[in-house]
Length: 360
Ligand SMILES: Nc1ncnc2c1ncn2[C@@H]1O[C@H](COP(=O)(O)OP(=O)(O)OP(=O)(O)O)[C@@H](O)[C@H]1O
Ligand SMILES: [Mg+2]
Image (cartoon, rainbow, N blue to C red):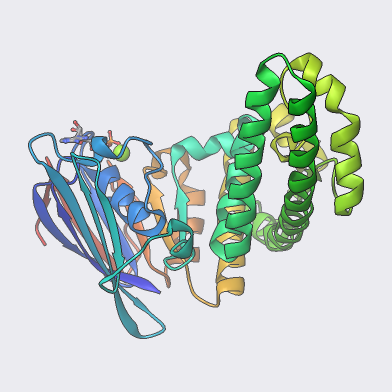
């Protein structure tokens, strides 16, 4: 699939701007604070109906406007499609796919398939376990609608459970926690199974990619850490229930999906503990390309790559590896410098200056 055009109306620092894309490398060059990331954010919004930079929709509306409207046209399996997202200062939010109003956001996720890569993503390798869970969840959610629903329902239960645990528990509260545990064990079983399956596929893709980037010097491996791998609902419920008194004592849920992690190994050492900066970045590049391959295989579509300002994070060898790898797919790349663009044919270069597109 590929994006053909986007119109940004009152979005961030854009007044009313049309941007058209080629089905190849789309490079946006500009100084800091000109509006490059805003383009990536608008595409992300069209796919997920929420931003990855803020949870406050009002921040997306241009300071001088009452509303923002994003219109995106894309092509999927040779069919022309469109998305419209509207947000106003009164808090109204409307999403339309092919002019049809969408009521449930979960029903659109996975329609426009994206792989986003930004400097913050180094947290996937170096940061807290939640960053790695977010990484795997983002892939799983784009693949499976039931995964999205299971995760949403699990999180709802977890929130209720944690709110109960915060106060002094009554007998009725405890009874309710048993009911919640019953529900949560169902979701845990499904989600753990799916995370395990997708991670297996990511590992499979990662091995070869990583060997290629490192010229056969490094082998990458993952270990999925979860207490619930290969357990059925009943066993999971047992674990949760056996832990109830500890939960009450600690005033929070001490077991659950929110404890999952993925350990990344390079040549059998844990990369976040022992890896050099370069090794961490290479591991991340591998993960993102494997992410791309897994989505491509399972969705039978090529995902769109959104690469926000990552050129400053990679050395020339890795930049070239990446650009060669993605040359035949659609990517939208932002950068402040352009020393690396020499040898690519299928490329469109646009300049961004203060919320305006130059030389298009
Ligand atoms: N709601 C808004 N209304 C108007 N301008 C906004 C709004 N939100 C953000 N901006 C402006 O958008 C600009 C930032 O855009 P963006 O993050 O896309 O920059 P960038 O080109 O990616 O810069 P960098 O290279 O530093 O990452 C800033 O000038 C900021 O003040
Ligand atoms: Mg930026």
